[in-house]
Length: 136
Image (tube, rainbow, N blue to C red):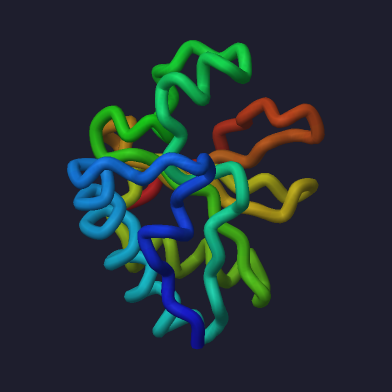
């Protein structure tokens, strides 16, 4: 089984700052390794999803305030070689992510800690999030 590394979250040629690396380890790698052991399939960080420096986000026409900039605990988009519906169930029960959004048409799941109350969303074909349910 392949385990996640901090370098999996690096989407630019620049190194990840230590403060961000610490957040990646504590809030994403450790919980996702726990999920992966239960799920029994590899979990991969989507290529454009890990840590996005503010300058990178702005160069793409975005505000630079994305959860992927690791304001707070950060965000990750993941995919897998197994069934994503099973992975979703494990994310619901084995992590403390407060927002989980499944992109069925693109084959990945977004996870972050932005909200205080835990929720599950699904993205439509245009990528717009549609609320599905509250999580415990």
